Image (cartoon, rainbow, N blue to C red; front, side, top):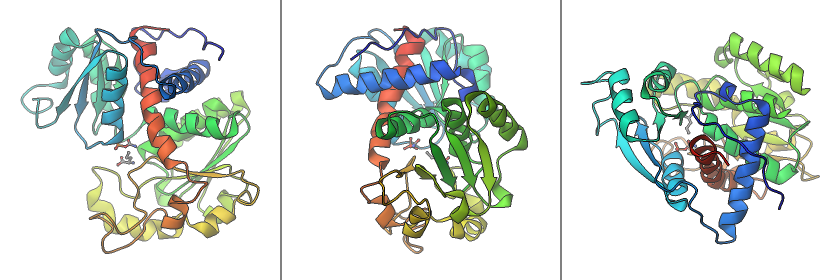
Length: 333
Ligand code: CP
Ligand code: NVA
């Protein structure tokens, strides 16, 4: 396989996808593809030997937390998981003070929490690379894994069409919009008027789209919005920290459920030119506490389990893309 060109992001942060140039983003995706191939052929290396990363998480996580820990351990590095219960962050100690302490001990910080301002403060004060592992506003590492999954299916990202259906202003939707336009993918956001993304972010995304030959469309009509889509993507209707809005959100988003009718409306199901993606966790069945009474929410079980669903490849790709990020930011390659 041809070697991925050199990337060295030493001394930089990843707070939103704005922090990577289009070319840097593509190189990280390509490096992740290479790392995935290596790992699948049994190769583990030592590119992160002696590096340690603090995983500061104020919200729950399965995929992201495990992806960081496994990526580091695969390459000879180490991680320390610090939940809100474990450290003083934001209660007994200010964010700048915690940042300065962690920066004296760790080579980098992965942060998951609420305010975007917190991850910005960690970056400002720690003196080491800080990566946003999800805030209320953005989930950039997720978008990298999503794009790798799309690339694995269609080879070339440019010119594809991705329709996001659901809560159009959450962290995943925001980062996906930026990731798509940077990669040259037409992005369609199918969401009720009440949940449209912030105007300034849409303007930013449209400016990038103009350069890459892609586009951003916002529509409240999911059946029309998914027409021609190569990727149909959804996320939970109630994000972490928004639990109080559950009843109103469910009422608003029921017409936006991804089901077989919506997948057929892409016009791409019969020619195998469409896949389904979801960042996970997903409410597709009655097997969780949250959905016990209400059944499937944002996606029906037949779509979730269909051959065109790539959700578990996408979940695995969290690890390969995070590994690529860690290598690029901590060592360069
Ligand atoms: N997709 C994602 O970020 O999953 P976790 O919340 O399990 O980390
Ligand atoms: N939007 C979701 C993503 C979970 C990975 C949330 O913030 O809960």
